[in-house]
Length: 156
Image (tube, rainbow, N blue to C red; front, side):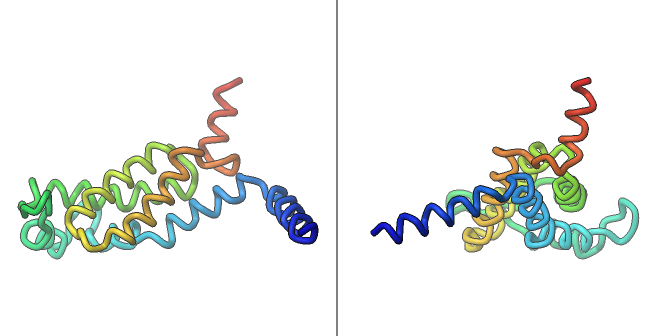
């Protein structure tokens, strides 16, 4: 029994030595690379602020909101596609560099809720994304971030 307790204590000491800011940086990198937002956002554009035909088609014809068993068309499909395209590019980039991180995480949580309404069977994937976002929402981006630099600058 003592061997297990000693091993647990040694393991705890090793992992407690890892700075939380390193872990939060890795979470932010994970958000950028392992969620589909940024890649999906790039596909919505044919140029600067010019929605692709596929984005217009998907939001106008294919994407349906599944709410309490009823199916609804996407409201304002071109505006929805435009806002989704901007959010899918800007929010993951902001989280990656740690700028407006909590607000960006909240935005991605809201987008994930909407995506869940469109693809209700993908809840396991969306739950995983939401956990990533909740870590940043609750803990912030850490010391290795633009938010931390700005906070220090404005405290002076």
